Image 1 (tube, helix red, strand yellow):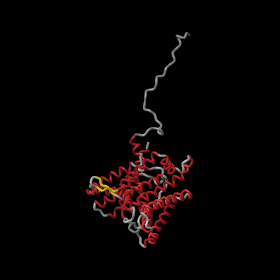
Image 2 (cartoon, one colour):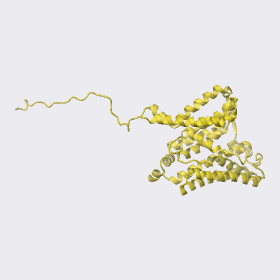
Image 3 (cartoon, helix red, strand yellow):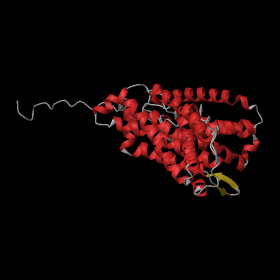
Image 4 (cartoon, helix red, strand yellow):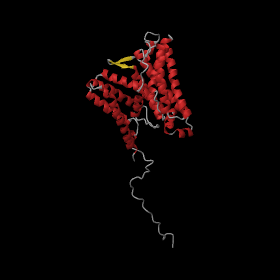
Length: 358
């Protein structure tokens, strides 16, 4: 048979194009699902709902001065909720955060007055003391392996007792003396507790600090190596250590950040009211933790954001002032917060499941 007579090989036509087969593990999620997966989305929707509700229920909230009051209340919670949230993302939480605020204020107030120092000396010593308390909590935690609940509960009790006992011993009273006539007071008040005018509305400086700290915390979490370390130690401490993450350094510095937040809020309280009651602060730690949880942080660690607690703190401020402006019985405040906390957690759970469902 000649070459010309040989049959041409059969050519199988290509199959008709059909739907593209993808591996469920690698397929790209839609933009909507990726947005829903963000930890702050649930609390943002909740904050909008609470905001609209109280604008309707309490018309006086529509006034600029009333909204400035809401933002002020939110900022005093939000400044502390930010480091508490970072600590929770790192897998720990701090029950001493509330009384630590009062400890810092008492330290600055008593040192400044009793030793006739410039108030700035008291401010600096209070900062060192607050950072030391945070470092102690972190050091005990990493060296002993005890749960942060037990370590910080012990610190909470110690600080609560020291606040009362030392204040009575030094001042003979349960509160510090008035420091408003001391050197440096006006400058410190301008930094920690001043106000400024915006369109005829008086806005507290803490609102600005709150937003600045939130932006800084967001940048740290999303754009720095330290932020990666926080998520790593919160997700799995042993795995993080195995890949070279400095777990001890990260844990201790996270507790020190809580100490810094306690110092800042303590200074605001001291220079706002010129004196501090030694028995205050008890129970505030639960408010800070709740704001972080409402903001999307998990108690188990490894998940959360810095923006979520901003909305969580705003919800607290809105509810706190909204109940007053609506003329309701303020005794319902804690009950409302409990319902809000449970609802926010359920919404966050639903949003996360919907975002990760294939």
